[in-house]
Length: 254
Image (cartoon, rainbow, N blue to C red; front, side):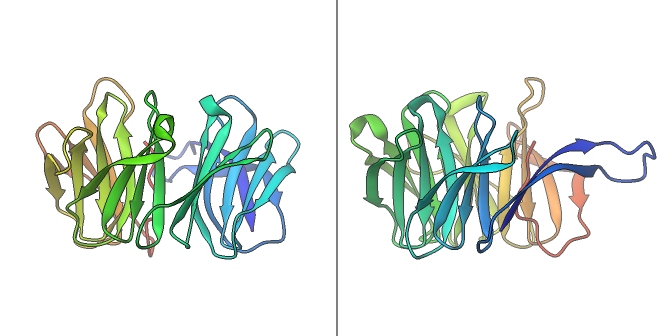
């Protein structure tokens, strides 16, 4: 598996797309790389592998600095919890595992879902982690309560591929599902506030626009489109649908 570390450079000719110039390639003999996450302050990349391993790379030296053998099944997602010097990962045995990345000690091993876990999301301020799964649910975990599950969110009719906290209102979050919908939720209620419908096939990914001037939510789906939603009016303008020349769209970043 290989992890590429690069920057986006805009081509002068406006009709052409952005090009990714690869600055460094981080490479090791492994199976597929399923997920990567950047540390907010250190020059590190966390990567989850189909082989069941998790690696930490140094982006300045292009060297592998730490590795963990998590299990014999694929690890689909991983995230740094930088304020605790930890990371969390989820594997196909339906378990969440938390490690201290300094001592390499395993902190917790939790039986989390009834099917594969697709994504984990770290709350920016509270001691919460949100997980989404093929069991069509999301669960909220509180590390100050010994990683107890404090809430379960159900309402999707297919796999929940991704979930993201709203940076402008961190008591709310959105979820993307293969049932073709995006749902917006609140931490205080186990039913969604509303749904956004418009994709013709399953929704794989989403992200909130981080700027303070627009209430936008982006979604990417198997219908080869990226849609930009106004989550206040719950509308998607036809001028804000981006058609992609690709087979599948797995991730969007605003």
